[in-house]
Image 1 (cartoon, rainbow, N blue to C red):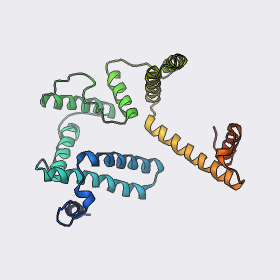
Image 2 (cartoon, helix red, strand yellow):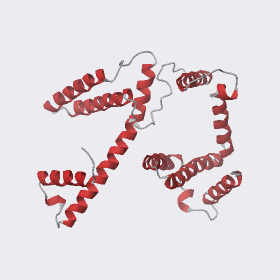
Image 3 (tube, rainbow, N blue to C red):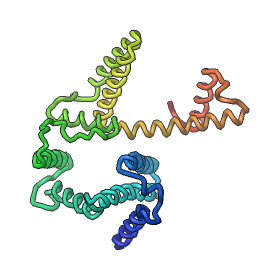
Image 4 (tube, rainbow, N blue to C red):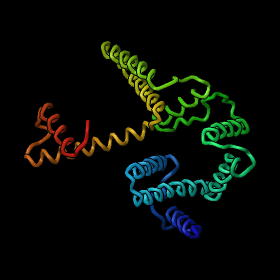
Length: 267
């Protein structure tokens, strides 16, 4: 199947939406900053569709994400900065450059070696651009979701051995951070509480990494689980003519445990 006509149609639609003469008023008034939150949102929608295993929804969400790329490219073209074609060329060049074992004569035989080589190539690219930051942590975007950025920072540090040898020692660090959080709470130190909660989350992310678990994905699954159970609890309460707001804490807990049993889900 030739996808080029479909891409051209989408580019034409985007140009029409941004046309000051008869285009969409909302689309016309947007800029990079105003669209950026939608781009992030659509990326999360893609991840959610994947998490749910809904391929039909994934198709739609990938389209929405592609539209975000086209939108940004159109605004850049209007400013004379670059075009959608330039975006395609740039990523094509980058992929070929960063896969020398596929498009060149490099010898890379496993995924781990490719990961190391990928990072080395990225470091060389930064040096070529004149980026003066030669830290091992250079290039870890500050715009990443916090959990994802934690994992990337920890992985970079682990490359020089700054890491735990296994998952078990991380538990001690988690207990240490919990104790420090309790101390900050005892002193009603708001700034200290904020800092210690962050340290605790960072330690939990480290544990997830050592267990080869994506903390963001794990949290999304827990969110889905909680939402499923809470909605079931609301439905159960409604069947019994009860309102959740009027229930005592013990009653809420009893209903929550009951819906877990009905759903056949363990704690």
